[in-house]
Length: 386
Image (cartoon, rainbow, N blue to C red; front, side):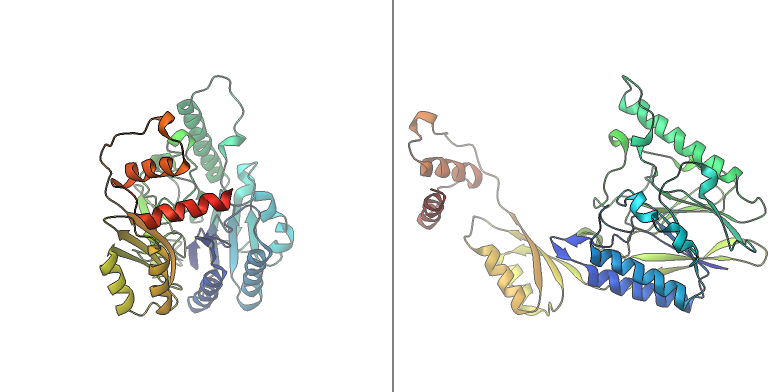
């Protein structure tokens, strides 16, 4: 039996207000092809299907179109859990209908037994505890409780929930735990929404039950493995980079295999293709312009980190224009300027004109007087405002 572990699709996500549905569509097309190629019998999706709790019509349509293709073009079973970005009620609303298509969706988890799913139901080969994101807001209120005490109570809840799930799973079958949470030791990319109470870790590797074969997690966007003594605890990561700092490593899905003897092993780490290049260009004005003119930037998203000695009027538009001529799309320009030195401040009573305030601000920020063109630009803005 072949099982594919993926997570954190974040359908509908935007990067600096650029829609990315085309990238998600290409990913889902690739995923469907890989499922067919590898004869995958079970697909695990460990939360954050959508980027927001109220996804757009286009994002929702893309998701259900993929599920329809999965049902009509393959014999694959699917288990989907809600993540912290998802609306659990929205996600599981059509669950009874989807179950007829071999698709099991778990958005809310009231009882551990309700999370246990045996696949396939008529001749089970694997038992899965599909545990969605469990919000700390669901914990009973305790007066005068510290963040540390609440964090520990949340951790105990997760531990006991997984332990109870295992007690309801078939002992003779390989066991997989699904979850959407932060485990101590995991590496964040800063694109994840914080789900740690007061910054405290939700759960530790040692908190997971012993009698398990694999833990398929979502939430952290970097593919990574945290090893318990007897089995791996694995984040598959997001299929596309959520920020520019995630473009430095390959995205993955994990292919698992259950042998005829019932042993569950990792068959392959499969690299996901890059559907849109995210590029970071760094340097001073001349270096950045040289890079812009010397390469083909067709269809690429670009972040520019520009080092300047002083403020340059219109430099953002100039840099964007050069890249656009080469087919690129600059999403952000970050400018690094030298730190200002301490200067004499103008007293309040001496600030008779807005221009005086502006000149002081400029002097404090950049360590020198603004030139005449900058002062005139400010005066024009003041006039527009008035």
